[in-house]
Length: 276
Image (tube, rainbow, N blue to C red; front, side, top):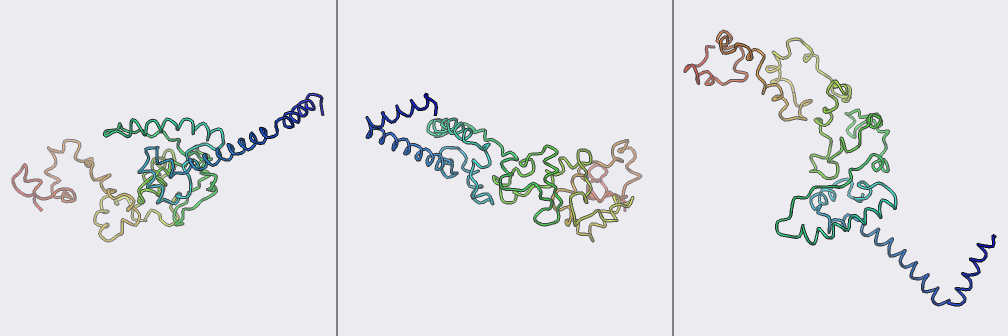
């Protein structure tokens, strides 16, 4: 042991021998502070405590009924580490001031959420990125590949905790923001293991006959993900209507017009129903 270290030990021994009662009290106080600080951090990190000051009542209620009800806010919304925890606690003191002053008034201002979005590392503490299939077994979802492409978990699972029950599963619209045939493949078989494009959809006359065929096919088996699926096409005017249609439409009258127009549509201009 070096002289410097030995001298320090001797000084500590002398200090203790000369003030044993004071040193014991100091040790007890330090231990008590450590225990109290840990207990305070643990208690104030619980969602039930957070909701007392943070203006997050709807999000809190949704969290309570989700499959993540046993996961705390900090587990998802904060990067791990004691330094990050303490830093957040200091910043959160502002919430106390706002809660008892600004947001406690009759007409509080609109609140803009500033919470940290969950990062993949936070989700990875509990979830495996090796997963390939959905719980139903119908969807092929290579999570690891999506992460390698730079996607963050909340890109697809944004409503898994703070959303209405019917919104917690990713919607197909979310998938199609990337699976548009350009950024990522849009073929049914790329993701769906039990659904494929029916053979009649591949025929050249499918657009002409699909309306009649829909009376005998269960279109909802594949297209029920979007209630207004048909409107994605039917709200657009046919190509034939775009060039000199007002001049030429008479010769086409009766050729499938009823698919979109009621008989009295023609009467608005002509005063008579169209010929069958």
